[in-house]
Length: 363
View (cartoon, one colour):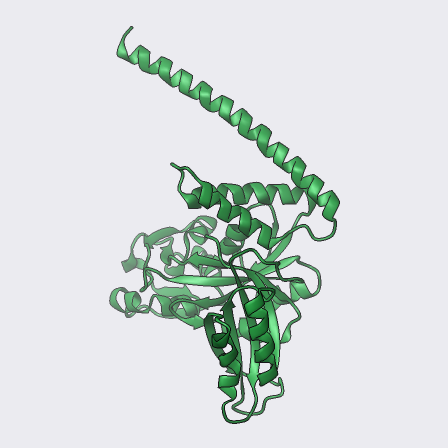
C-alpha cells in the first residue's frame, strides 16, 4: 500500500472518530438541556443566575485538560448555557447602540448569541428599558482603562432602582475603517469622543490635519463612513463587517492594553459566586474625619477596595461643590467581613446605596 493510500485511510478513520464524538457531544448537550429544563420547572420565576454561570465557567477553566485554551473552552460553554436558558426564558438585553458598537460585542460576550439584543440610542435609554420592563437586562459601559469613568452611567446608577448583577471586561482594539483605498484619500474622520481620546497620539502622528467629527457612537461613525467614500471612522472589526468597510489601519489605540469595563444591569443583583465584587455609592458627613469614617471600616475588616470615584451629588442632599463617592470592593455583601464593614461604613456616612454584588468578570 502506498503512503498516499495509508494517509487517506488514516484520514477516513480520524473523521469517523470525530463523527462519533460529535454525535456523543450532541446527545450530551441535549441531555444537559433536559436537566436545565427540570431545574427551571423546580425554580420557576427568574432562571438567569449570574453567580451560577460564573461558577460553571470558572470550573471549565480549572478542569480544562487542553489543547483548547481556557478562553475558547469557556466561550463554547457560554453558548451552551445561553442556548439552554433560551429554551426556558428567552432574554431581552438592551445595549448602547447602534449595531456594531463595543457594547453589542460585550453583550454577546457575556450572554452568548441566544438573547434578543435591543439597540438603544443612549445610556439613559438602556437604563429605562430595564426600569420599564422592556428589557430583562441592560449592558452599559462604566469605565475605560485609558480614559476613566463614564460619568453618565455613574449618575444614573445613583438615581435608578436597577441593580448591578454582572460585569464584562472587553479589550478594545480600535481600527481606522473606510471605503477609500488609502489614508491619502480620506477627507474627514468620524468617531466617538472616547475613541478619539484613546487614539490621540496615533492620530496626531498619522492624520494630524484630518478634520475630526465627534458622533454619538463608533458604530454611527462607521455608518456615516459607509455612506461617504471620502471619509473614515474609528471602530471595531464588528462595525467593519456590518457596514462593509475596509480596515485601513488596525489596532491604532495608544494603549495596547486598552480595556473597557461594562456593567450588567437588572432588577436583581447576584448571589455569592466565590469571587465577587460589591459596588456602592455614598456621601460623607460634613465634619472633620468624615472620609476616614467612610474608608476606615474597609481597612479595619480586611476588605480590599478596587475603585474610588467622586462625582457631583446632583441633588442627592448636596449643594454646590458637594460630592458622592462610588466605591467597588472585593467580596459579596453577604460575606461576613464585607457585611460588617458596610454596616460600619453606613453608620459614618451621610447616605449609602448598595448598587449590587456580582461575580467578577470571567473572561
